[in-house]
Image (tube, rainbow, N blue to C red; front, side, top):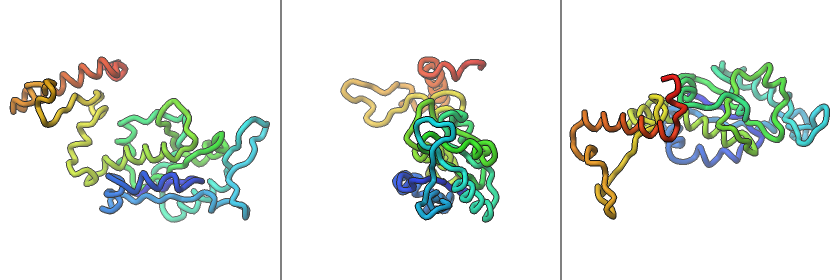
Length: 226
């Protein structure tokens, strides 16, 4: 898989992709992540990527020309399955969306800033808009890192135990059950006996019931319509 991220602040993305699972995935050549400085595609010597909004109003708007130039340059090298704009009002990121995107080969992610991007970009260049929550960040870089993480960890070979991702919260429409590790008794706080029983059928039944109970309590909306 290849992920190209377009941003006017590339240094914001250095840390997320240079440690832990995302770093190892790149070292294994399972995924290639390329960060593109939008200022390199500006039409002037001042590397301008934003301007005042037509009609007035507070805040600056990201210009269409640098964005279009960057996307055209990338598309001249390969075809892309999705060109995603990280937007507060896009479709809310879910595990299902992450699963879908993990099956793609080439993805562009565009990070917004200021008051957003010239809407002609959204109308003519973007294939999908995704939000990581109903709140506003200073820019789309952290959101792009979150989306990338949710996708990359699903790719075969990224996690040492590939079944791990399949048992995450939301994969089956439920939040994950409680988990415990050693010691089994700490300060009088004990691990449920069934998890120590060694009986796989009883353990799986307990996990399902526990996940269902936790979902009803924590995220009852997941059960609506089921």
